[in-house]
Amino acid sequence: MPHGIKKTEKDISSQPKIHIFRYLKNNFPPQYALYPHRPLFVRTLWEYIKLSRWFIYSLMMVRAFYFLSKKGFRCKQIEINPTSRHNTLVINHNLWKKLNIFNFARHRIEFLIYILKIIPAKLEGRTLSVGPRNEGELLLLWMHGFKLKNTVGIDLFSYSPKILVMDIHCMSFEDNSFDTIICAWVLTYCYNLDKAISEIIRVAKNGALVAIGFSIPPPIEKSEPINKVSRLRGGPNELLNLFGTVLDVVYWQREVGGRASVIFRIKK
Image (cartoon, rainbow, N blue to C red; front, side):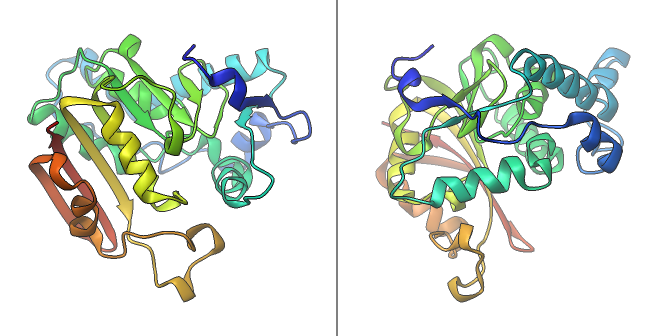
């Protein structure tokens, strides 16, 4: 376990238990989790099966039930600074609200993975997934050829040994740790965007690929409390400008219907 993690974790004995069976009864089948109906770019029957909607989601839920049962169906979460409510809002939104911990938005992440493979990304290298909520994103990366043993996630809460409890604003990884960093629908939740981006740059290796997706926030006066601190209302161009001189080649840039995504290489 990386140095410093124990200081930022605690068991949430005061939080309600996660009722998986009640969730499945009320929400199955989870349409977003089962997307796409037909995986693309498959060459063999086994590749089709392992990328199928049923296989990945079922595997994710079995693993979630196993790890949660060992923990008394409770998660760990990052220690909250009593002077700041922002991380509490983020955790409540992504964990307790409608049990979003089991919401695997495959349709948002898979197109980024396909582009990373085309560039191509270093599949056998170290990969960081920022804010995955659950193991779905990590398992999807694995099924697309990324090495699971070299892939790690971080989030403000976790039930899985593959997802470390850590804040993007202050990661405990060493400098130049990762070949690929995926940060999908996370940055607009950051209370200090400049600090978060500086941390992404710090832990990225020279030549690392960074894939970022986000929904462009509405005007501040129309935003929910969780988005009050958000920037990036200028879309992909605003985000790319924040990376400054370390921005090397931009392979992908897109903004459609209020959703934006970029993939680029870091040069140090």
